[in-house]
Amino acid sequence: MNIAQWLAASARLHPDAPALLRGTTIEADYAAFARRAAAIGAGLARDYGIRPGDRVALFMSNCTAYLECLYAVWWIGAAVIPINAKLHGREAAWICDNAGSRLTLVDDDSAAALSSVMEDMPAGMQMLSVESADYRTLQHDDGGAASPHAREISDLAWLFYTSGTTGRPKGVMLSHGNLVAMSMCYLADVDTVSREDAILYAAPISHGAGLYNFIHVRMAARHVVPVSGGFDAPEVLDLGRALKNVAMFAAPTMVRRLVDAAKQRGETGEGIRTIVYGGGPMYLADIRDAITTMGQRFVQIYGQGESPMTITSLPRSWHADVEHPRFLDRLASVGVAQSVMQVRITDVDGKPLRAGETGEIEAKGPTVMLGYWNNPEANEATLKDGWLCTGDVGRLDADGFLTLSDRSKDVIISGGTNIYPREVEEALLTHLDVREVSAIGVADPEWGEIVVACVVLEQGSATDAAALDAHCLQAIARFKRPKRYVFLEALPKNNYGKVLKTELRERMKG
Image (cartoon, rainbow, N blue to C red; front, top):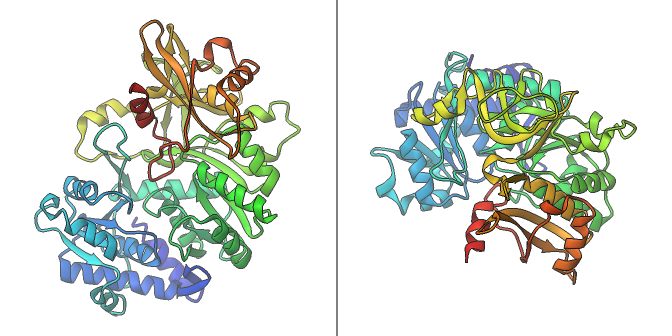
């Protein structure tokens, strides 16, 4: 099936339901949303030669037109290449070239970024700005097909490029079937959805936040792009109160900022029903603080681009089960396997480990990617007998709760012993003066590697390394504690809020 059939169905069944909103302003109901997608798709086929199976890149900031463009591409049977709008033009051009994009849909800012690197673009690739008169003409055409072009569930729909922190990004191929399975898991394992709900795109539509559009389209819910186009904590709180029944995806760093804003305003997040968090480590101290401030609004998911949003989940019921004897252990986990998934832990030889043993996390199920685009070597290393080798390290308990340790590349080997940075970070974050921390391994002639803690203190704090060292010794084994503390104004992060440990390791070499 073509995932765009969900938009066509909602337009038939609920034509007057509000669909696309900019802030609190309704820009299209479902009838208009579907009509625009069909019309724009017809224009892409007629004027730009896009055919079923072609790849079309989307390189723009969050806007309601982004959703129109996604469904326009699928309506005519093509596949989308969502590119983070914060990438450099040269990085975006490389992705377009690697994927063989026939057309890139842009806004004026990203058009300028690409125009400066035209020599890096694929030959013959065209651009269309959603802020142009040509796009507005397509929006109001009436020549679109009544139904989306037929596709198989195994056909490519979403070609997502990984962030590429260790080299060139890889194109993750997701099929229509992958996206349907992921969306069904949202209903089973994350949250309910109805026409009264609103999904808020405060994080990039090109990534995890955008993947939640599908189930909200299927249920004819509202799709809200903040006027700011991104994440602004006070704006999110205001939209929650104004719109009601708001759900959103947020990286842990965004949750922290939202909680801080709620505290400053003396609010609890009224109108925000669900905050799904993932995409990076959520420390136990932070989620406990979030629940204390905002209540039981939180659901955690663990996934990767290669199995998007769908490996495990920790629903709000487990966040609230404070009477369970292992409540804190479960709250520090990423939950249990989602409904269509199998999860296991393996050793260095790929053999399954028992409950409680630490090793590489592997996942299997219908959300796992088709493979990497034109990269057989990476496919061979990552997909083994249907299992996705995540590169993450963790352990399963006897009840199936998965606790993450770290990325395998981030594990610190000091004196022949594995030390997981997250354990060190969790310990330091319980100190009242520590705002953020990242533990890394730095080469050492005696130990092989030593633990270095890169720390951001709360404003005005005078805490020093000795105080933090004493605090660590009360929480973790002596051999795990940092041998060095580096105090920073801020931790380096990528466009998705993930701490760049690679950059930190480079800094510490100096």
